[in-house]
Amino acid sequence: MVITIFRSRLRPEHAEEYERLAPRIRALAESMPGFVSCKTFTAADGERVSIEVFESQETQDAWRNHPEHREAQRLGREKFYAEFRIQVCHVDRDYHMP
Image (cartoon, rainbow, N blue to C red; front, side, top):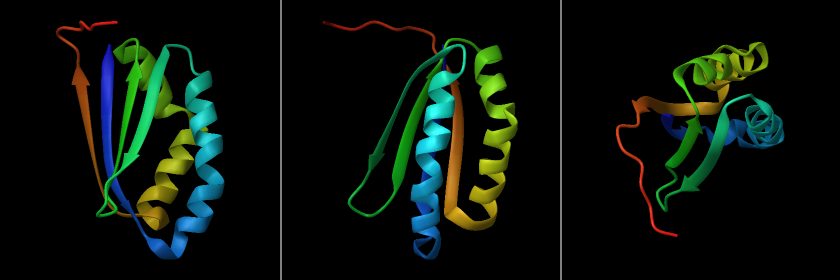
């Protein structure tokens, strides 16, 4: 499994446009082969954290390089995000309780 941790802060002047685009991009991610899950949290100070999980590096790469996602990335850099950080992690162990 490959986990992407995406931390960001939105620019308030473009938040409305972002909120219109975000559901489409989320649905696109969920439709990708190898998609496992995605959860997004917002801290009290406005920082947002998304945790995206894909089955493999190949499926995560396919998502990263999808043309519609690439366009959303460009808009994020140019308009939506005041700041962001992306960390890609490979799972060494995965265990849980019911």
